[in-house]
Image 1 (cartoon, rainbow, N blue to C red):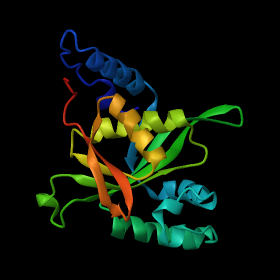
Image 2 (cartoon, rainbow, N blue to C red; image 1 turned 135 degrees about the horizontal axis):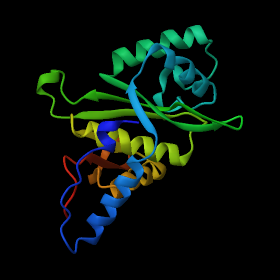
Image 3 (spheres, rainbow, N blue to C red; image 1 turned 120 degrees about the vertical axis):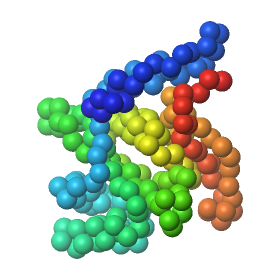
Length: 207
């Protein structure tokens, strides 16, 4: 578990701000789960390949839209994509029930890039892809995402363009934890379709 996130100091909650109290309670409870994350390592590629074969990496497009690559071909394509398309890539971990046994293992990945070509001038990162492996549960996804964004927002702000109802509902759930907020809608990301824009909150909300 990410101990820094689990032991974060509790903010002062204004009396009468019931929505803030509820968000704080929800965040504290979710952070108590056994989840974690770290930068993607070579040993994670086999899990990514297993997800790829089930179509989980299709949103990454390009060579990942189909599922015919061999493990060797996938390894080359995946590593090349992660290192050239993104500036940051992380593996998310959670407890999963497999063959009647609880295992702490990768359940998804987050990949992002800086908002400016010069990293030193980049005020935030943009989420490029969030990949969930087939064995991850809805609970795994929420808990690992809450832990990830709650930790990362203290290091660098992040922004996501949530296309589709499923992605919007997912980020709305994160917003209920007080770690992200919706800041608008754009019609420029996907032609002719509205895309919700979310950004991480620097601090716990007080509204």
